[in-house]
Image (cartoon, rainbow over all chains, first blue to last red; front, top):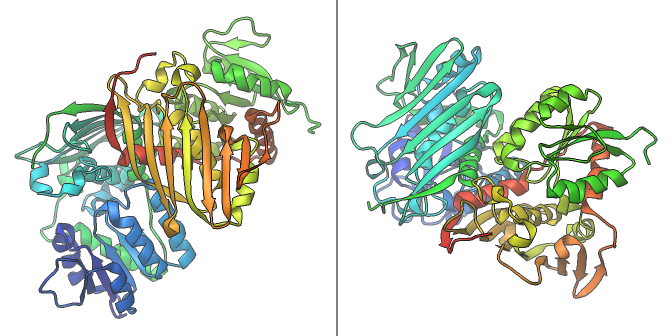
Length: 313
Length: 313
């Protein structure tokens, strides 16, 4: 437990993810408190609200930490602005609309002595650390990722996910990739992909991706945004010494058919994010792992494009 | 001039680029000689020819250097095989079909104490070093890249460039990006792109890409594979202190309208590549700059997809 006063955080973008996740986790954390909000639509807040990031940076010299919860297409300019004002910055996932822009932010953070944290919330799911430890002493032979959800339920009316740069089904899919890259003991790369675009949209609604690694390791990922009813977020890894299944988005671990860990009622991935962020701020260390975004960019670069019927919200 | 015996090189893939560029440059170089060829179709060679890389690696233990001139889709497995056999490896551009696979190769080269060289031949064009030096003390305000050529002339019957992973018009366009990333004094990133795909092909025939950098810098790139007649390979950078134009693919430099350098009759970009490779081998240093490929992957990830009429060779 920290004895220091909490870090004041400016929360930028008060959309669904900020309200559902960041605010509750910051409120629970002894290391942080919400110091200001940047939003053009927030009302009824008990902290100062600014319409622009620039106004907040000028008006709140004592707020040293900025959490960016805006869509990836506008994240770069805001991150750049905050880092230029020597603020520490937390980036929601994905950390940017391009890989190169995040490299540029890393460089700027280093030059300005700031902490930059590219978060991957799914890595903080209950089962991930245990799965990583279990896999560390084993040799994966094959893996299967099934990430199927209902876009209408999870992204109601979010136009930006369908616009070029919004990633489409890779917006949830990158959560799976953030877990995969965390738990697999050796790197893999995209070797082929089929991306299915609705004829009226600029981002895919489904994707089938084949990854390859050393010694014949293959990983097949099935991302689909058209699944109604039960939602599926599973990663299964077959190794030379047994099979492990992460289900519920990483919350539950099953080894050789036996459940070894389960979701605790109040656990939150974002509590894990802010706990890690507090450690990074204490040690003045950045954490920017771009591997999940590189896999997405690779899938777009070398994937086959297929077309399907138009999608309407 | 080296006094040591030349490095014996195994040339893998005896296609157009190997015959037109690698063989002549290796033949001219005092530091290298062709020691073997891996090809399923080579005839009439005066060095041993192997049908597979594996056979060459086993059959020629004294050949320590491998130049991979095969298409990017099959380069990874061959590079991995050569590095696993402790050979130093030169990669034609682009260095792979994915960004992640080249990161994996870098790691393998490091683990095995091998030199890995991801070449970008256009960086060795006559005007590039001069342009870089001139720009180093200036502040770019905007830039324009025009890279327009006739695919039927330069890639006759090369099916792989039209297959997913073959990059399409980015195959020449990445040459422009390799120069851009070499000469600009600060990083840029793709902020938007329009990619135009023939309705019967998996890779784009044209692309318009907008890059953004710090302080309002923008770079507009126009790649097009449909240009017959005069071919255009130009990069113009407007700075706070004058304008520089690289034309002829980087061969010619014009500053404020005055030509300051021109192509020498026998200069070859590949002579520059092998001279640099000799230095890397002497110092046991790898050179793997993935920035041009990252920009291409970013353009595919956040670009808008447009469709145009079918293309036939």
